[in-house]
Length: 69
Image: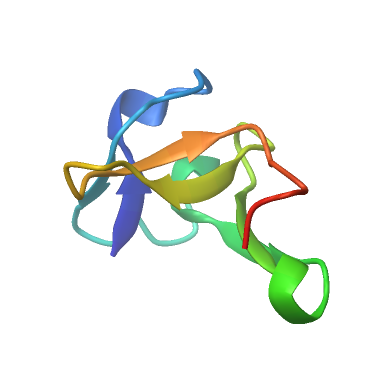
């Protein structure tokens, strides 16, 4: 499943694929959709940051940029 590497709450932390940790209360594998329409983002529960793709293709968590689409 999608997982924030090392349970990081830091901006720029990479997302990885990891085994499902189940219901252990680990929030680095929990995400929610926020916003509407083109402003819709996937937000990480542990950090409150949204997911974004870097120029090199890595998926990371960052502060939301309301101007990006």
